[in-house]
Length: 142
Figure 1 (tube, one colour):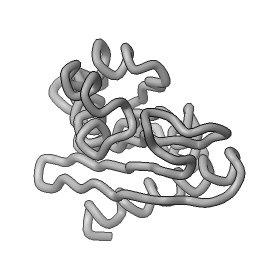
Figure 2 (cartoon, helix red, strand yellow):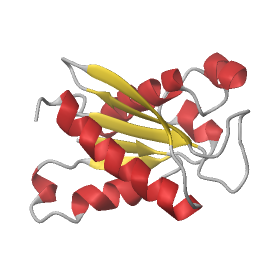
Figure 3 (cartoon, rainbow, N blue to C red):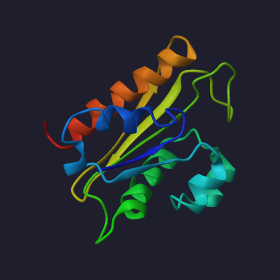
Figure 4 (cartoon, rainbow, N blue to C red):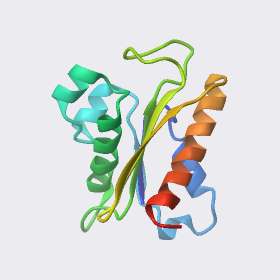
């Protein structure tokens, strides 16, 4: 498993590595807060980023795909999960605070979960992590 995070800034990785034995499945992650990192490290299409900005369902899916490749040593990771969105305090990329996209990519399944969350910056980030963990379970049929 691998994580690509924007608004969650490492909280998602922490949620996974907080579980004893996580090293058996968690390979690593990329905190891609800057749009340029999404493009250069995760392989998100630059034209898409220029047209839509970083807060977009297609960007989230490309982040999830990209992190599978970025952290895989002998091939892509089995699961890539990504978060991108606006935690506040101000809107970004033309999107209101609380707009979040969570994406999961596996060899068999890809899904994007659009969210409109309410609360403080910390609450939106925490809720995004919870939704991402749930999305991974859903993608794996758990």
